Length: 405
Ligand code: HEM
Image (cartoon, rainbow, N blue to C red; front, side, top):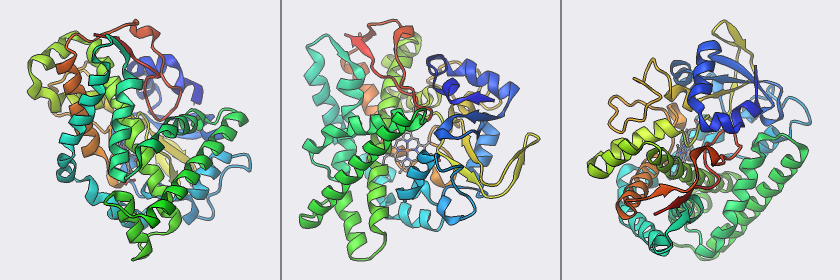
């Protein structure tokens, strides 16, 4: 058994390879205590099991469908909070999942996303124009964070001036998602409430003044066709805002750190920009912007590696563990921007496969490609060992990344 603290420890974040290599060998299915305030959650750490679980309908998302599956206790507030109000594609099963994903999936196809590339390039260039003369910046605060939040906000139709609060709210949500103390829990609930209130107010404004954007499109589906409930609408907007930026921040931040600490790979990419798309796939595998999948519940007893995952127990899969599995990746601990047969599962697998994958890939290509081209002598200011990682179990991202150029 391991604890939540093992998953969020700075050493684990800094060197996930060593941590997950040991688990895969010694305990491919292991119990984690302390996650979401629960005594036991199962964690799967190898590639084949991760894929099997992500594709297995016996592991479901929607707690409410099964009245016999309840939060462990009344103090199990995190699970309760998560499940009492969220109602979006990532927290339900078919047929609701199919319906809710279908309502927005058109906006995220590779073709639609390709149309956004010139605008993403423009935002990227403007961000770099602003810092180019400074010689130093925090790559997270001044570049990796504002880029995806601007892109997803424009897509959804969120006014520029409203975006200021998002970082504080999502940070509070994520920091507290470990649910270590009652205080964390209180902060989380408060942040969640502020976020929901904001979305409700935004919807009221959009109802008055509809525009050409995704939120107005969803409002139309709600008000004219009754295609989703009000709660599903609010929850879906919440999901798109949170999933649409925190994850991509990590791809850009972790990806640049990996290149800066592997100078031969970075130089190869600078000499051969046509490798960009393959490099982004390798950075997704190697740096794990999302390192663990979201929760799934066992709808019946399932035996794995001689242990029984009991009906009603929670299961997580380690995407980073899977992506470092030597059974499927040659020399997994090496960063190889030309890796062949790179079947990483950084975007998950099965019906909940990341809806935003084409957007994340395109943003990663534009951001990292432009940084390498415009700031060719970018270097770390601090030693890698001094960098701080956010202590959240599911995402892997840097608090800040000071660089000079
Ligand atoms: C789902 C990763 C960017 C929207 C997921 C899942 C993963 C993931 C692993 C599946 C979780 C599970 O099955 O438990 C990533 C990574 C990203 C990224 C690594 C960036 C590098 C984005 C962006 C959006 C987005 C930019 C934009 C809207 C979603 C949505 C789902 C999802 C809506 C739920 C899909 C469903 O339940 O059918 N993502 N994501 N993601 N992601 Fe992403």
